[in-house]
Image (cartoon, rainbow, N blue to C red; front, side, top):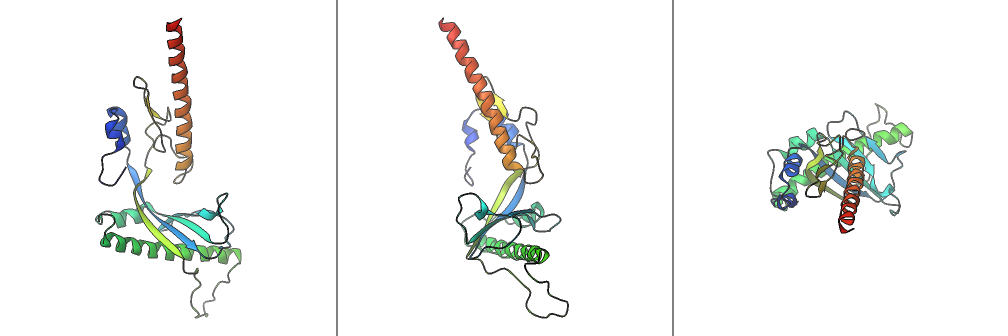
Length: 224
């Protein structure tokens, strides 16, 4: 869906499915992509961050199979509370100077929080020393990133599942199916949505295949 444009579902003429999808409330999120010129020696490649006012999740994107090593690429998700506090009341149109300035503030704040969390992790691993109380040197931080860009994600994650039993939405008379992360409760809150979307798609494909085979069988009987 493009910003300010009607949803593609509007032309599908399946009002019951469309209404169910639109009734599913979404959690907001602000995301930050960071590229650093050296690998950060964290023990893990992804972190669920608990009880932090700003950061909920962070993952080393460059750890995925086939990605080039050396430079670190990290993806950071904000908490819903931080996103809501920033987004609502500040819905400036995208691609404007005001919006760009506000997203620069988000990028700076989220990178500072990300840096603090990573440094604390490295200190816990013993990779970095912990500054003593009497040490007045500059606090340890990550190198300045080569690139960082924040993105406003107003409808990021579904707040509830709308098809927990079937795992998908359907209008069998029209042969129309809809699947997604909003159909299945996530296996691990709050970041099991990729798995939920994948499972929903698999259930949908299986049911669509069954319907296709049944229709072909019925048509074949009629011809004979």
